[in-house]
Each structure stands twice: as C-alpha cells, then as structure tokens.
Image (cartoon, rainbow, N blue to C red; front, side, top):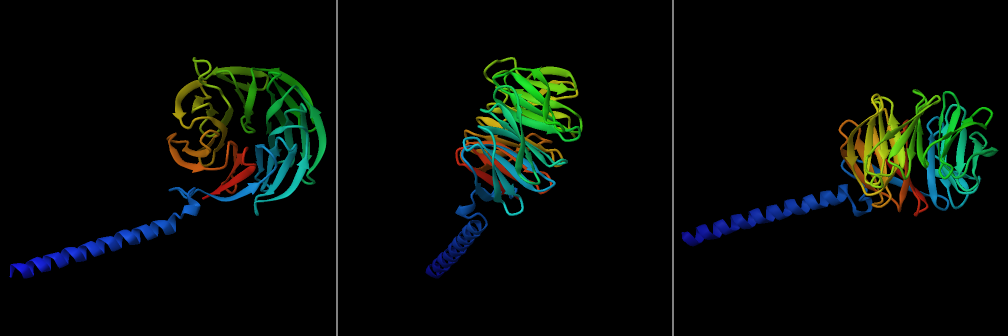
Amino acid sequence: MEHKNLRSTRRRYALILIILVGIILTSLALINTIEPDSNKNQLKDNHFISKTISVGSFPVGISVNPSTNVIYVTNNQSGTVSVIDGETNSIIKTIKVGDGPAGISVNPLTDMIYVANYYSDTISVIDGKTHVVVKEIPVDSTPWGIDLNSENNIVYTTNYFANTISIIDGIENNVITTVKTDKPWGIDVNSHTGHVFVANRGSVNVSTLKGDVMEKIAISDTPFKISPNNVSYNEKTNLLYVANSSLISVIDISTNSILEPISVGMNLVGLTINSDTNMIYASDIQNDVIYIIDGSTHMIKEEIKVGDHPIAVEINPETNTIYVVNEYSNSISVIIS
C-alpha cells in the first residue's frame, strides 16, 4: 500500500511539473510574440521606432510644419536641407543652402522656412510652396539656433561667437536689430505670449526677451557644472525647461524662480514639449536615447534607444509623431505609439 501511495504521489508531482513547464514555455512564447528581438525599442507605453530615414551628412536641426505635415532637416556637412513627407516618411526634395546649416524654423502661417548657416553667417529663407531659396540674410558670426513668432512674423537667431541675437522682420526678411547676450545657443519663441527664451551655453543662465526687455535667470550658482544647451517653454503651465549636461532645470516664469530639477541622462542637448499633452522630450547624445517625461510629475515614462548622437528632437503636435535627429548616424528616427 505504501509503495502504491508513493507511486501515486510521484505521478502527481510529475504531472504538476509538466504543467508548470508548459506554463513557462507558453509564457516565454507569448513574450517573444509581443516583444521580438527586432523591436527592442518598444516600451510599456507603446512608443517605438516605426522608420529610420537616411538624410545628408551630419544632420543637426529639425523643424515640422504641422499644417502641411512636412519635416525639414538641416545637414550640417552637406550644406543642404532634407524635405520629408510626414505621410510617407520619405524624402521628397533636397535643398542647397549656405555653409554649415544648423538651426531651422518653419512659419506654418506663411509656409516660409528659415535656416541658420553657421559658417556662412547667413539665414537662408526657403519658400515652402516651391522649396526654393528666395533670400540670404546676413547676420552676425556663427548663427546656430533659430526660432520665430508666427503671429507677428519676427524671426530670432542666436549668433554664438558674436554673443548676439539677431531679430529679423519676416516680411521684409532683413535684420531689424541685434541684442547682446552671452554665448547664445538654443532658443524657443512662444507666439502666443511673445516670450523669447535663450540658452546661454558655457554660462549658468538663460536669457528671456519680451519686447525690448532682456532679463537673465541664473539656473545655478556653481559654474561649469551646468551648461544650458537648449530651452523649451510650456505656455499652459508657464514653466521653462532647460536642457543641461545631466539634468533639466525647471523655471517658473511667473516668478523667475528655480524649481526642483529633473535628474536624467548624461549629456542632454535636444529638448521639446507638447503643451497639449504636457509631455517633455529630451535627447541624450552620450547614451543615444530619447527620454519621454511626464510634465505633471517630472517622472520619466519611457526611454527609447535611437541612433548615434541624437542632437535634436521635434514633435508634430497634430500627429503626435516624434522625430529624432541622429547626427553621427546621418538619419532620422521616426517614433510613434
């Protein structure tokens, strides 16, 4: 009787073991089906790279026209702008501009595109309907960042080594005036509030310009540990975000007070915000990733591996498609959810 009970017990254990092995194998198969090796960029919130677009040599700047769903990318070493159809994510034209094109900005109301040529010390003006350069505007030395106010058609460009900001009339396409600042790099202009925000690279402050009034906001009292690379403003929360070496500084513009920073990454350069969803997108050129950050909690929601040296990031608010400029990969990562 004892032998029978022992054999019966062993059979039950063997059956349980077989069932457990079956469950484990089934679970592994399901995991491989949901997250195959070929799609490792897909994370829990379902953002993933849908396509990688090859562009010119050393792309560094990007701008999206949400009205036409056309994306423009500056290729710094090629001296060109790649024009991408956002519907098909394919290049439809390549435009020759000045030497060392860097920053780029589109006015969706006029369909005019402005390109900062770092080595030519000029701004190329492109007609978005014909994709032809219609004018070259001389500015101060080494223009890098560029943005515009679409409502009053005023264009702003940061001239790095000249330590100035050129202010351009977008109707006449000539320089109205020049404003002094310290090593300006990234820039963000808000068309609704009229604010202009500038990251002063190599310093520990950002400049704010509204009308003729220029202010500087110190983001740290420790020089050289923080270097502002880029800025992005959320008009709905009135918060300004500054991409630094290894953190994002947060400034309450209503009081010009510094809030708790967002500790993330190793070398943050690209930065943009979708004000409608209150999501922040930051690129890390050292880790080759894009961070998607919840603007309400300032917590990282996703971390997406992209190409080599992601220097810029932009979003089309109409389609919620994210575009990442991979400088050393000569490519654009298209991220959707």
